[in-house]
Image (cartoon, rainbow, N blue to C red; front, side, top):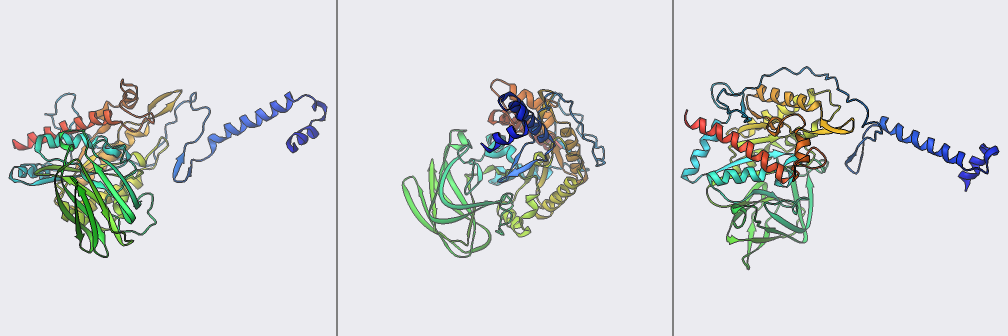
Length: 454
């Protein structure tokens, strides 16, 4: 009422004709929408709200001018690389950057378990890509089970390689709860058991190697003993986990079951990190995806936690899949990322001395330009940055962007029937993840077979 009276007092000559007021209001509204394009991106409850730009479909793409001088590193690929295959680029001199990992694969024949730590962000969340990569390796080298699974997970029902439901835990992670001074493990997840807690884990039909549970290991830390109730195959057992002031494990034989239920005595000083599902000799790939992580969270976990995890797992290979959260279409400064990732890799070399390192380049990523989706111009810059990081640290590098098909390949993945990527033009779905996993596996085995003949 007040608003109408105010407008009428401003325009007395036309107070009986509301068309004029409507036109004025529309102009104000249009001006407001246009002005939104100059507002900086904001975050609400931790989620980034995209900038609204009414002219994004018609204006030309802006090419950001990089403020970082990136040394041009020529892709180092062997002449023997098959045509059409994206081979692993090896920047170690005189010896393969993956030689320790390849040697460990030979030890499987004598009963050894070979382990891979696959650190990444939401690109491999829910075991997308990683699940198929693991299954291919286990099909060739043996092993069954998905490895370490966080005690609780927001994507537990989305994941296809194992299912979970749970209740009664307070859950934290290194990216979204960094202010909580908790003893986070390197993979960043931590759960505290409350009253009436339980966690049910279910096998799936994803593959022959995910249909049964035969052995689990509980990863934890606690200021006092923990009583654990375990129900599997309609048989209940109670065990007591000893006090532990760093990451510790407890192995439990289950026989063969499709479901296991775990309950823990409530205690604010107990930190449950995850359950490892495995069985027999072979290869195991732990999916350590953490949404929103650019790789820097690996430096937040204390060195003692890294050392404890490595002592337990004895990783032969560490795969790093990061970069998506460190860039966007406007990124121009790469110095900080080069500096941080160099530090991350040097710390991994120090704390996982027996492990080889494979750095994955970012996938294709698209945004809307002139009304259609195209590859961000900064994607190839990030890949140059990642290749430089690999070369400076003398580690292996695999170009996911090239393996997908290069420029605008994400658009093709989205358009495929059935679709192989999500409508955010950034993340693959399970079908697309399977395709990229096959390509990575093929490149890794190509190098492995070549190594065996040397």
